[in-house]
Length: 322
Image (tube, rainbow, N blue to C red; front, side):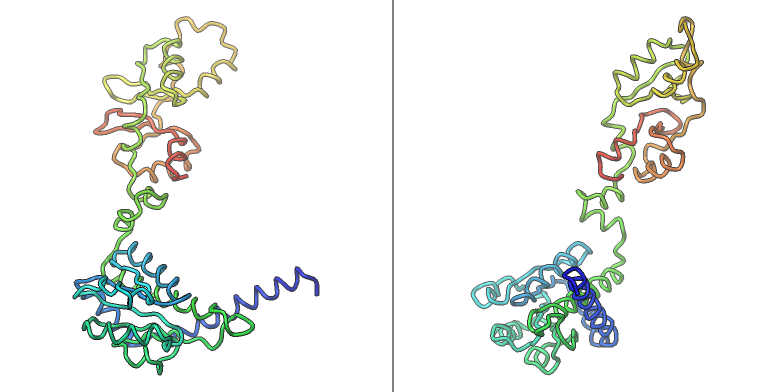
């Protein structure tokens, strides 16, 4: 077997072993899991998530997932907790402790201290009979038969299982809270996902120039307007009402028709009537859909039937929506 075949074989084996372990977790979801979710949902406090080693790294990811889906969460390293960070735990907080074995020295020291605070304790462990499994108020069973590591030592399958249990917690809480896509956008305003959910056409047109000519404007005026406003097109309007659009493509097509004199030629003679338009309050992602459906690069925006601006597909590209 060559090196490439060996690598592919090991990779597939790892994926298959972890997939089997994750599939088995479905059988371990029980009433205790449900009770833990409801306890968190009904709590007035935050979720404090702690662990040691690789479990601590998983804890930070679960914290990030919860925070982004409407459940306030804080990470507390188990080793630091017994050296002052227990002050992070407030009266109404719920603590989740993650440990594969449930018997590490740090966990054995930390768990009694948490219980002294009277905070509800949720354990995520592969061993329900462990110290953590016996002491936790709720045990979420993250059992795995073995690690994907050939020596059954390096945390691989077990940390994946912990992560999946954390995701299951976060998703259940999301559903109970009625957390919507718009709520998600509030926590992700700077990312492309957030922009797709909150960015409106008006947010773009308000920053753009507003190219506009009358139907009687001569060709020179049209060319200057398109050039100066740098959006590749201009609206043709009368008393604020959109009559048509002239793009730089329309100008090029006019030239290819062999027109030798532009004298007497007006905007109304070359405009495309009844152009595609969109309400200025519409979502930018809806504008993108309309651009793609019609294979065009510009949309005229209007409000209450009046022209307010022009949106170019490049605007959406700059915002990261496309």
